Length: 126
Image (cartoon, rainbow, N blue to C red; front, side):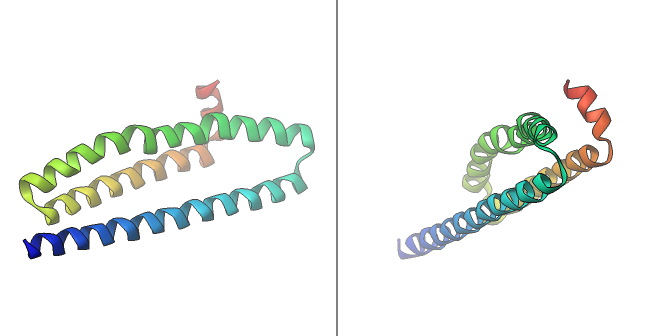
């Protein structure tokens, strides 16, 4: 029983550490957003800035958010927990690593396409 408590404590510590890292990432994202707003406001007039900001955030970035957070997240956790129960913690973390790596690659390609071909993306979305 003490080995099970030790494993749970270790898992709990990992979850807390991961939550802390995700929190820092969100904070850095918010700070990057403030920097972006300041820089764009210097280069664009108010009318252009409002249109670009609204389109990019309400369509492009929100779509990427929906793919990453609202679709993959809720489907990932039950499969991860089943993998942990059936095959063990190491197998579950390998599965998690593979899913997150695949998600990173998909998001990298998606964002790269948005950066390299903005006209095509705008035509597709509108």
